[in-house]
Image (cartoon, rainbow, N blue to C red; front, side):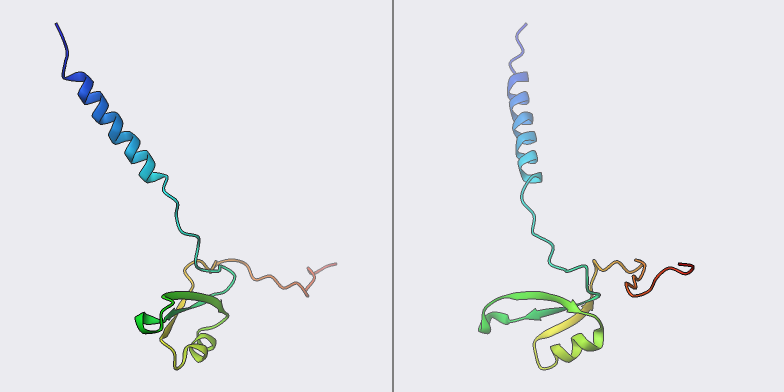
Length: 98
């Protein structure tokens, strides 16, 4: 008995697995948001001005960001990568009892 249908099936399933592995290993973009600052400004420079769009995550508050974005094609949003529940460090304070 000869099994002629198994070889093409193995080749096609092997090819599908290889292609899937290559697509899964594709390079990803670097993180756009700086996790050190709680607010980011998303700047749109449109087709007329060129340059595309980008994020500027260097703001400590929404009012500060909105003042910078005023008059520009930009919007301010909370930084999704800012560690909200991280403990606040005060380098000038010493622990009590020392």
